[in-house]
Image (cartoon, rainbow, N blue to C red; front, side, top):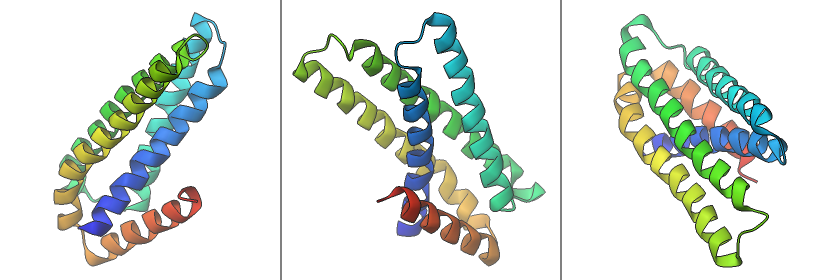
Length: 149
């Protein structure tokens, strides 16, 4: 179970990091640029979902469970992006307590996403073959090593 939590945490961390760097890069962008940034974020999430699907070698029998995992990842990314965008919008005028609170909202959205993902990923992981579980364990251990520093 600890492995599953680590896997899910890494998945959300990576999605959050992608969303955060995209949001940060948008910086002082105008409304049209913000909508473009949103499209880039969505594309990044879809790419991540697609890569995970391939890496984990999701079978036709696992597809229904995978659909739940993928949708949870999308929903969590939207919630995280919203918190990041809210913080980004106020960064120039926020007081220290407001900034800390907004950062707390980002961290909470991330934590909530991990918990939601753990709920829907656990049954999928339990149904995977030993080879798929090993792929998942290895993939997320590598991601944690790359992004956990």
